Length: 234
Image 1 (cartoon, rainbow, N blue to C red):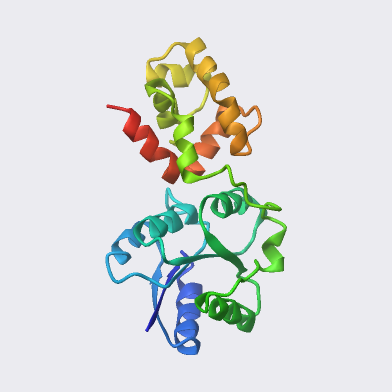
Image 2: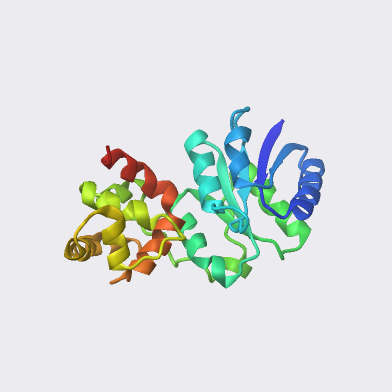
């Protein structure tokens, strides 16, 4: 039987949607209402399709983290995004679209039959264009230079890793002085490190970013940044 994983913190909505999908597509559908539960669900048989929301405001996580975990655990699982399409999730949506092999993006506001048809086509291996309601939030094309492996170029030595480690904390007050104090680096050294990384940051759509913009990026993309940071630190 077809196996589908749905990840969304709107428990009532996703529960009802999962029931309909299970019935109409004759599928086994599991539901995760927390990103923290995804790893546990993935210990079972692989899923044919994983559909994830982007926003999980009650967690220090996002749909990008959830879908990245699915892809690491089961690279053959087809990935899709199901989102309200609000402007404030647009950066995460662009990150997901660039960094993961997401097959399509579905809108929560679309008619049910339209959503079901998209899921049927995904399971049949067909090309499924993103819902027009969210198409404008996506890049015109995926950036082929922007890959999970490319994050390694943002950590060229331990000093860079120390800076990124503190910037991955969304509650950290990202000023040069605070970064210097937290890492034990000199103030000018922190500034020089930022300048050294500018060419690589542009690959990730960060053109001359402030430290706070780097912090926002580091938090959003920590699933891809953290392994390189940890590998560089003792």
